[in-house]
Each structure stands twice: as structure tokens, then as C-alpha cells.
Length: 171
Image (cartoon, rainbow, N blue to C red; front, side, top):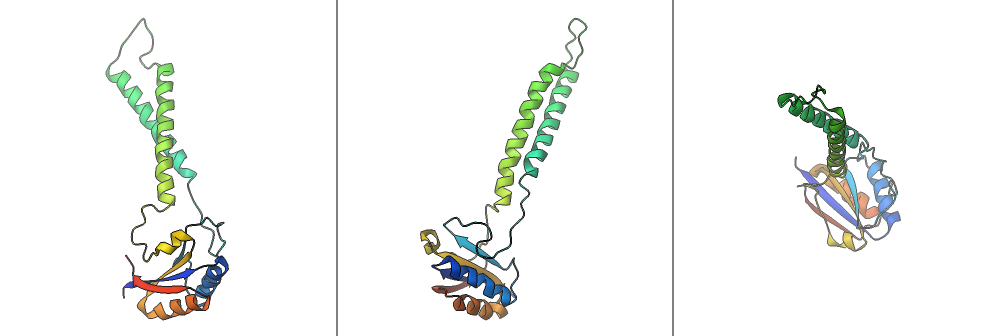
């Protein structure tokens, strides 16, 4: 069966939290619904679980990659084109440090930007239903489920006091 989406629009945050509770009681899992709002609410304000993020690992991995690439680039360049001057070593460490620092920072910054996009799930293809009133202050609860459970989802949203309930196909 194809996944279907049900969108419940709520004017009050308490009603949206009640809808999440109703969905949990009806047997829907944490990954079956999503809360959309144009207003920032604290994480977990609607009873949804706190999501774990791994954003802090992206800069470390990026810094390690940038450092490695910079080290290989500078060492390979100096070894492939040696300039022996006055008996000094071929690998000039002080000059390499500057390039390695810049490579480390560049890798950390690029991976941080990619990490923010990844952890934010941007772009989010196949989100399902959306209503413009969400950007005007309404709170949307989107439930994605099989067609057989569509009635349960609608009932849970209506019992919580949804101003409107809409159906549609998922992505």
C-alpha cells in the first residue's frame, strides 16, 4: 500500500500536543508523525522525543580530512620538486604548518556547513502535505501512514481539536 499523509491544523500548541498524545495512544510511532510550525517552540514542547544530533562530529572529521589533504599536498609538492638550498631539509616544516592550518580550517568549515544541512534534513523531499496557514501561526501535525490506518489518524487529530484535517499522497 502507498503511504498517505494526513495534516491536522491547530491554532493552539496545547491542542497540537494533545494530538501527538492521541497519535501515540492510537499506536503511531515517533517516526510516523511530524510537527510543522512557523514559530520556534522548545524541543519536546509537543511531546515528541528529543532527537539526538551528531553535528559536533562533522567539524572534527572535516578538520582531520583538511589536515591530511594539506599535509599530503605540501609534502608531495616539496618532494616532487625538491629545491636543495644550502643543505637545508627538503621538507620545510614552518612553511607546511601555514598550509596545514588553512587546510584544517577549510575542511572544518566545509564539513560544518554540510553537517548543518544534513542534520536539518535539507532539502526535505517528499514532506507530504503543507498549508500556508502554518507560516501564519498555525501548527500542523502531519501523519504518514498506510491507507488502512488513515481513519485512525484523522480521528486522533479531530479529537484533539484540529481546526481542519486534510488528506494527500506522500511525496
